[in-house]
Image (cartoon, rainbow, N blue to C red; front, top):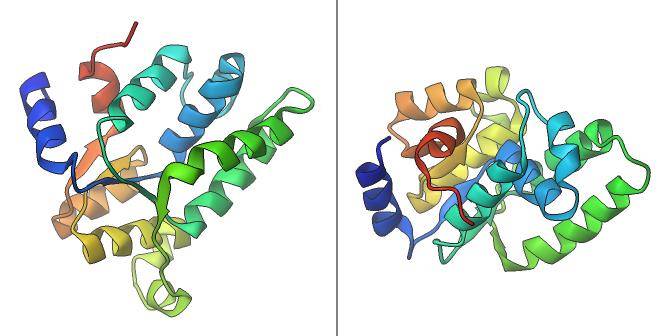
Length: 171
């Protein structure tokens, strides 16, 4: 996605909102309280620049949407990957602060369990798919399997890798 496409994406969805996937949330939240931990939390070596990009990008949207399944996955990943003593507690406190401004999209378990995509994506990603379909909103995403499924289903996405490559780094 080039910068013009990115500007058009933001213009189109900024008033409606965006659904945020687990890994971008993890980078954002950990970057808020201990950027040195970013190298431990994902499949890639994230840094403070990535957290700043996410914060700046997401601040353009009036509504940020998450699902309870994503919150659970986020907590589990942080608990496993944060390396410094006391940082999981700091993570939870940061989530309490950050998520006050997010909208929760609740998806009933039967809807998730009845989706064939759950067999290869898992429950958190299917909750994101259903939320996007229900509200006709795009997804900020990092995971390749979910990205492929969204493309197949015609769901609008913005890939975090693409965002990292094109979004201007805030000062």
